[in-house]
Image (cartoon, rainbow, N blue to C red; front, side):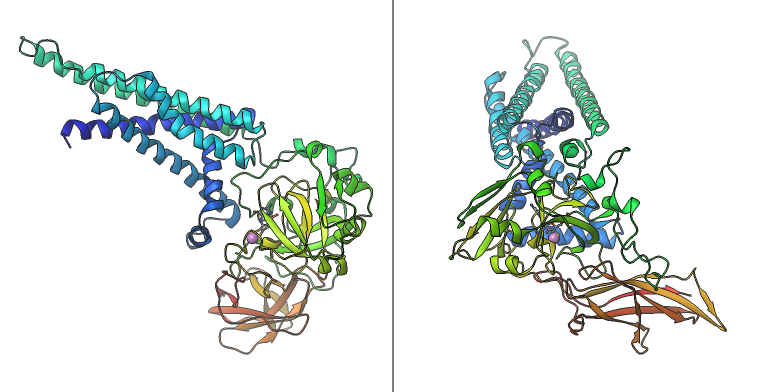
Length: 558
Ligand SMILES: Nc1nc2c(c(=O)[nH]1)N[C@H]1C(S)=C(S)[C@@H](COP(=O)(O)O)O[C@H]1N2
Ligand SMILES: [Mo]
């Protein structure tokens, strides 16, 4: 390759990077302003769906372990931020590569490039992205066609900008009319200076667009949990003159009179709504509007149904359940677990109205983001706790947590429980759900787990002559409940902890152990036994494919 050619390729990469950064900023600002799709996230989400399960799994566990290793904060929100950065970086890299290739191709013909070449470049990158975005159609507020046209238009402009820049650079480097004439050396030097100055100006202009676009976007950033789409659906229970109020703000917890108080530093028994972990396959949560939404119940039923959110809320007696939800990707002691008060309708009542035919055996649930799962029909008919959920803490579900409707199934990890539900189809045969197809456990029953939240070294207790150190945390075994928690200090014997009355039979249980103070550094390990008498598995096992097992422990210096 000639030196000349490689310098054009490097310039093409630079120009591609600058123009793509500016384009991304404009796409971002528009997505925040007008609700158009943000192409990098759509590309990322598409890849998450089509890449082999093992690759996706590797990516997720790498991100989760990096967050833990470097203490980067709450796992699920940090992981989403990391995904966003990767998504943007990926498209930027694509822009750099295409810029380099484009300049190399143009350079093979002498002279100026036609504008049509830019249209071709824009179409080659923009059309697939637009199609992908329209077919996913997850989080954009604009109709798919509008979103697709916008993306194509933006990329065509981006392609033409490449041609314009290229032609400017050609003009600065074109051979001079009379190479032997006096002074041409000086003029060539001046031109290369002009060329450099042009590139610097280009860098300044694109940097300005990038910063302004990103800034405008960030200022407008529609919080992913904006109230707009849900405004119409506040349950009667939550309305007051002051507007919607969370149930927990005005009601005592059902175990408020429990004898045992949590050790200081134990996590909140009811997870605040904005602190609940969020895990799903979307860069941005799907935005559904109550007015356009219906739950369809079809398949092997005598009486197919279409239910609005108001139907679910007004035509059925609401059921309130305190629920602990855990992600199967939660490592031992991890933060992908939370407890809330869920409100909905037992699915049994609705399915009975739809009248499944004799050969119906399973419910196939589909969600707006393409997620899906299969539930055993008999389980639904035998367990009223399996519930279509429309409220958390007395408020409509937030966009991130599945508005308008999600399912609750006791005893199972979150991967079995679709958010953003759109349909239930009664089918004859079992089918693999989204994560089961990608290698995860078919049943996904929660593993018993227990966690040391706190060794409260600054809240020592005096009882007579002894000083006690409150140690505490949670234990959880799904709907099986917890019958016993034990704590071991260093290599001592297992000592029974006290259990606080839980919020319900399906939530975590808060435990506490007041340990007689001994100076020095100590290691506190916890284990539990579920309500059926089955002890927590002690063998350490990774989250894949059936959920993590093993004991949690924490060191403290006293
Ligand atoms: N539609 C849909 N539902 C979904 C998912 C998803 O990606 N899409 N993720 C599941 C997983 S893996 C978990 S752990 C829970 C998390 O629910 P949360 O985000 O409300 O905590 O949602 C489940 N439901
Ligand atoms: Mo999950």
